[in-house]
Length: 333
Image: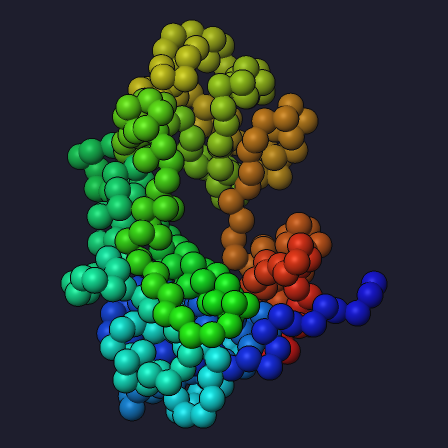
């Protein structure tokens, strides 16, 4: 193997104002953007409020104490004041105005954009405004389900980092604006595309939804298949009731989800995840085991890609000029 490629932001200094953002989505997004800059080789300085790191007590909590969220977002950053020369700064409008007035390149996070004041907002609120809550979860009257983790804020952080990379490459001075709602709407792009192409948007509990998480003998498996996969899946399970209505069509299976689960559930419950996966792969049926967090440390694919460190910290799948940045580069920040 050749030498690791040089980090593209080596020698750059980035000011992380995520801890000083007034609202949680902005704070998470700014912190993620700064983390990505650090992974690209920048020196990241994180300025903290008088009360200290605001993420220090946020869940999920580690067995030995401390926040896994804090460790993930802030590992490798250097706490310090917003003094000295910085190439770029990331935060909301108030934090940038107070601490980064002289920084040439800024990434400004807001809910709707710089022309409108930020209302009180959460990631759940962003999901509702964008329509994401309309497609995640079971059919009404069941409540909608929120996305796990911080997918909305992290996506906004990725957008902010991408904008900063472009601005740093161009040079000069620039204020790049990232709207949290715009990013969330982009995450929900299939709904907009569906309305444009077929005139309607998917809804929670649609009759077309035939994907399940099913109980196995030692956990769960995810059953995600298309119509072309139904015949081999049906034959794998081998229950003659699956050859009859209403299970012969996708809409029929979707409209009778509870009845379908009653038929297929015992087959899965009698087998381990490994047995189910092996049998399904032999028939090219897309079934995957739902793994426990500790199992991911030994997952063959994760190990081959060096995705998780021994302590479970994930590596970021960063690339530059078509090549993935080596872990040696990202860990050195």
